[in-house]
Image (cartoon, rainbow, N blue to C red; front, side, top):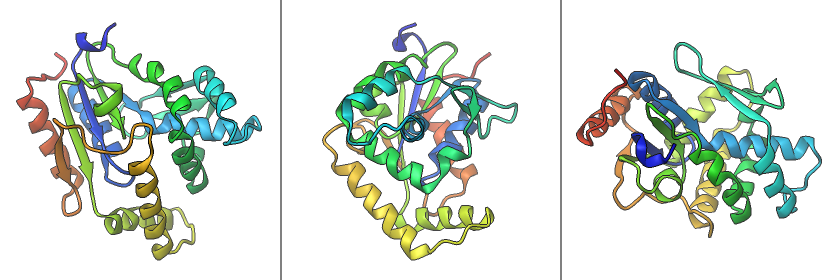
Length: 232
């Protein structure tokens, strides 16, 4: 089905802005499908490691990206969908710092982004789609019905990640996380292929001082203003 035949909402932004949680909640509220495009790059980074593909081997990465055996399974609450790679639940594995860093590297490769483009567009099926990523509104779904760019300060995003890792029992340095966030932002915003920038017609939301509920409420208002209705 063409992406123009179903309502599409794109929410782009940097890691730690809260877009993943907001997208999942919004998809549940509207009864729409959910695309976590960042998970695709994380899955590719993990698959490359498992199959012995070097991150510098661009052509092999592109082939792997186009043929990965992956699937997503939403739960009843709409949060934390199960992510499957070659039949294995890798939901936790792809959230490691190493995989995240490598995902940012492979995402900078035009050949990889091209290989994953149609796989992402294939998620646009009835009754609608909430697409979470970094170039959803600029490249993957340029004709989306509503576009949001969700951001937050590097310090706030690092603090959120710090709390997540501490809760998991991991020993981390907040200062090091802030530096990692800044470096990843610089890499994502300055890459030649689909840099991380707001779409020209996107509504920019800064979540630094907002709760998830406040961000969700603002997002749903934007969706409603663009004539998008929940699944009946």
